[in-house]
Image (cartoon, rainbow, N blue to C red):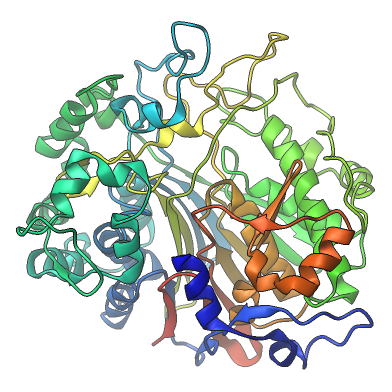
Amino acid sequence: MRRLASLLALSAALQLYLAPVVARAESIPLAMPTPRPAATSTPAKGMVAAANPLAVEAGLRVLRDGGSAVDAAVAIQAVLSLVEPQSSGLGGGAFLMLYDAKTGKVTAYDGRETAPSGATPDMFMGPDGKPLPFVKVLLSGRSSGVPGAVAMLAQAQKDHGKVAWNTLFKDAETLAADGFVVSPRLAGMIAGRAPQASQPDAVKYFTKPDGTRYKAGDVLKNPAYAETVRRIAAEGPSAMYEGPIAQAIVDRVREGELPGSISLQDLKAYKPRSGAPLCRPWKVYTVCVPNPQSSGLAIIQALQMLEHTDIGKRGPTDPVAWTLLAQAERVMYADRDRYVGDPDFVTVPVEGLLDPKYVAERAKLITDKAGAAPPFGKPKGAPKVGVDMTQEPGGTTHFVVADTQGNVVSMTTTVESIFGNGRMVGGFFLNNQLTDFSFSPVEKDGAPAANAIAAGKRPRSSMSPLIVLDKKGKFLAAVGSPGGNAILSYNLKAMVGLFYWNLNMQQAVSLPNLVARGENFSGDAELFGPEMLAALNARGVAVKVGQLETSGLQGVIVRPGGVLEGGADPRREGVAKGL
């Protein structure tokens, strides 16, 4: 009810909101969150879009001091780990996409967590041969993977930083030591239903001396986190992977029922990945995403399938347009769920999935009425893999940074579920990222799951930060969102709004969410309004209220004259702000 009231408080008539860009024969006004004015920044100026204003200010400070987009990303993550611990942190993982203005090159950095060397394929199976209850695994030490965010940021900063590493943690240290104001969203999570909030570490952290929980407006101090970021600033990333912090991680995951197996050697041996991203042509642009085990390729596939429809001739007040989007999502998920995993362990048929002939064939399943869920396809090079049994709750955030030199970071970062697994060390939460694996390694027919658990393997991720290049290969846009498996739908919606419906960035991220996966249709039912819901229902798209972790889209796009235009999802507390 709190979420509904908040959204309704923001609602406004979309008919007026979109009238300049949409005039269709079939047009139904929606009840939309009132979009904030699109943030702009003049040429040669930078911009930050993130889910918390304190993190935005930390990033802008670094840019003002001459830092690069990657330098700012380090500062932003350090603050988010403190003020938005339900979503991301030093104990989690991330994907970072970087556009280098000088070379025109896009680099993908992969800081996804890994399964420890002691992980086994059946570690989430019970003695009866059935998967263990999800919440039981979630709250255990066994759910934690080796964290990768700090190592990944350190590698990216080494490659593209302009200022000293030890200068990037000032805001986080000060806020932790002096205290920060608890935001309404964090307060809601503290008092929420997520089981992690009732675990001993979280209860201790979020309880005031008088025995009451912290509420919005209270000042929360975290001296342990201040000490952690001091260490990381002084010693570099090794402070996270060796020494007292590493030992604390090892000790904490081994406590309680279903102990984890992360070792000091696992932490010391962690290495982020970096290299060329997955880029493909679409319309007159080039869309770049991280390589699998990210699921970004599914968004590219969906965008290319939509080119075979007339969605671009329609608009967001047309129920046919939303039906086409839903159908594209269903096909996208059917293939993603079947085939995407860690390419070091399984064959991911990337070329087959994105082959133009295969895309055209799959696009035939996109109709203006929804029927039975589409089956997975059989692209060239596809291995025999079983039905996926992965559960993927949300607990993630996204931010975009553009610096004064034209370099851009698009980064999605996470601790997996709300407050990770509820366990803390050094003032930050540990992740429960291993629950992103399929609990069941094989199916009844013996076919292995592409996303089965294995030692050293990285779980499949829906995180898919995008960078879009224009027809000259120059940076055009960056978009991304949290939201668990719904990330793909959220990102796709924003891309459709920007490039098919010609909305500005703020309008695109503010659009209602529609998540269509298998037989389920969920999203912002209250924002579509009764008339649109009825029209969609008549087409077989019965939209129900979506999952707990809704979108947190952030984006930046370059407009004529080099002006940066940003947008921040009104469903969260962030802003897009230029220098």
